Length: 218
Image (tube, rainbow, N blue to C red; front, side, top):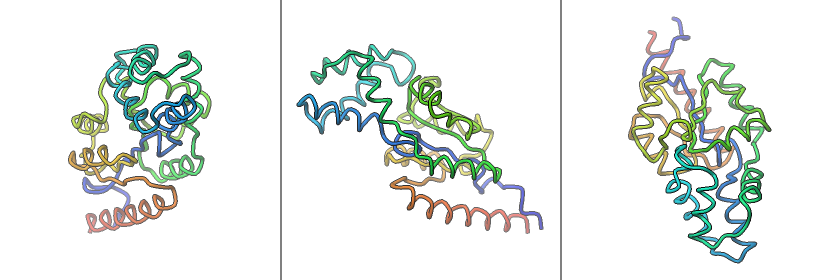
């Protein structure tokens, strides 16, 4: 009995969201911090920030950081130079070393590892600082794809690029809406809350995955 080959119902690729999973959520937390400092609405700022990053086209590579910050200023009253505001956001995306360690272990075991994130060219700048991309086989960034996780077809596009059936892909994200869309596309999913809980769920899922692979080889 050979247990090495993975069948279509076994996990062969594991994709991770970036902010809130591999790193602290710099975008949301950074905007909340800026709103608090400037006496703006703390609850509205992250929501309006997310709308602005889409409406400006920035997150899909169809607009610039300047477009994003200009639109957010108009909608919220936020103050500050683009470069200063951007630095505040980037400084909030602190890499979680434990998560990168998990990714490297998964890659060493033969899983295809990837990032699937609604990000901008800021992800490139963060990689220049943290060098996290070396742990991944693929990086899917909405800025270069021209499509984000709000578009359910993205998950099928990724499966096609990986040349895998959707059910062979495990996706980890902290956003429930993204998890729901991935699940509907056929992915296996884990909603990320914290690293300890995630490690338990991942081990359990991959143990079941190995059992399935063994049964498929009988």
